[in-house]
Image 1 (cartoon, rainbow, N blue to C red):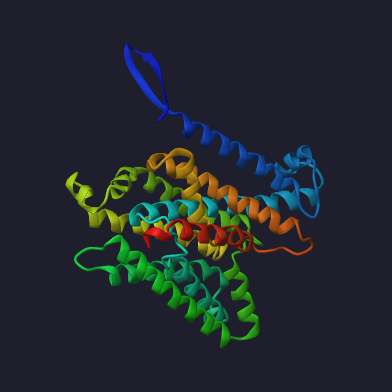
Image 2: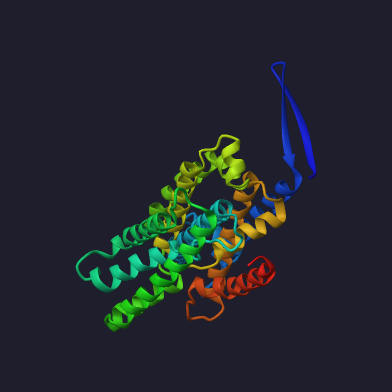
Length: 348
């Protein structure tokens, strides 16, 4: 591990700051890439702007039509892409640390399946009687119920990581079958709306969606930051974690709830966008190693880049069509998942 050390003397006290060079490089590079991608996102679409025109329109200057396109359509959609991508990536990083399995992700262990079940049930059975604004609430309830069921079924004087992932995969398959059943027996309009949501799309995102998701993302990210040390302890294995004084099961339940909250809030707004929570932690560990204090911010940045880039491609490559972002993340994530299975074949 390469590290640099800087010293600063203030008021006679010496302060030393350890910098992990790969983490600094990765964080800086990914932040710069995300900034460049965000600029391109605001400029490119059915109407293409120069950087100056996009910047002026973002702050309310220029033609009224340009301000409306950039400020009211593209900017909130960009913010949602960043928040959803970061949330899914962090959720996946937490799950992979808890379960100690590289194949773990919100869409693999049933969390996304629970959110999908709640959302499709709402769209097909309740949307006529209740406002569509309650759709995120239904998805969140579905995600938490699925996580609670997985945790309860996996409990046997504690929860082992292997039982948790196996029960999660089984419940995910069962929920997928239930969603298909509901779609088959629902009206065409409701089924079409539900199917579009299931593919994962942030089309039509508004500032109202941003202000709904932002508190969840910021609050849960802060909670994850303050529990990084107990997350790192989970990586040591059950016996060693208990040996160093970690309240293993209580901490595991808390971390699962944080992961479910991040995934559920993201899926509630962005739909079932797959594989972001699987890919981002792998890339982060490849760049900065296994220490969770480094993996988490790099995962969040990479997840935000993946969703933003996928949505930019989806709304600009096949104009006037707007392809759901989940189509592109699945096109990348499915081969990556198969690669992980192939690489892990000797351990299965």
